[in-house]
Length: 247
Image 1 (tube, one colour):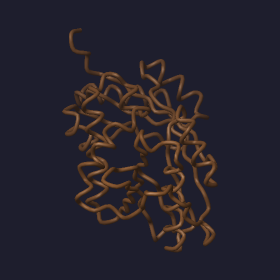
Image 2: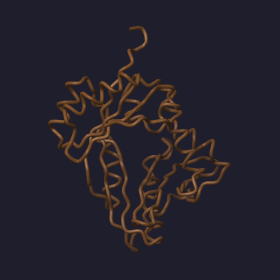
Image 3: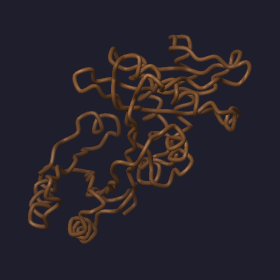
């Protein structure tokens, strides 16, 4: 009913776990048993991802003191040879990242994802949430199975997108996408998404998916313009078992 999350635990310096919820939804008895075990395990924080249609499970989570921190929207598009790149504004160029760009990528990632659950849950220190995304983009750049595309303008970084392909299933998923504040409104985001679609189509993949926040309407509109449709809606809950400092 739950699993420990070693990476999150080490990164945040906490004992972090996640509830495992089966297709039938979150059951009250199972939740009660899991929370009892997590108290014994001395968990600090528990995540739960519930389907938006799991009305009983949502009520059980709220009754147990779990707090809604994010709405997770998944969008998908079909890939075909006609998925072509969009032109970039004059002076911008798109390329696969190089190591010299890593500091700029970390900097942009650290200030681009304030809509996510790690910022909405104010129990996380802001600097650790920033560091999470800086670490995420660095791990993507050093991963052998992820692609990182970068949009540059002169010596500056206009934006980036990452995606991971699964040849066995013929699918790919966008991980992170960010556009620098100074480059927003120029079509950089559209060009990055279109470039990922085109590369995935060229690799004979058939579907591309992406996850964003329910509150991030700008991102949803970007993906919809690029042919994505919503495929699922889920809710992230956090439950802190450790008392807040000063209490």
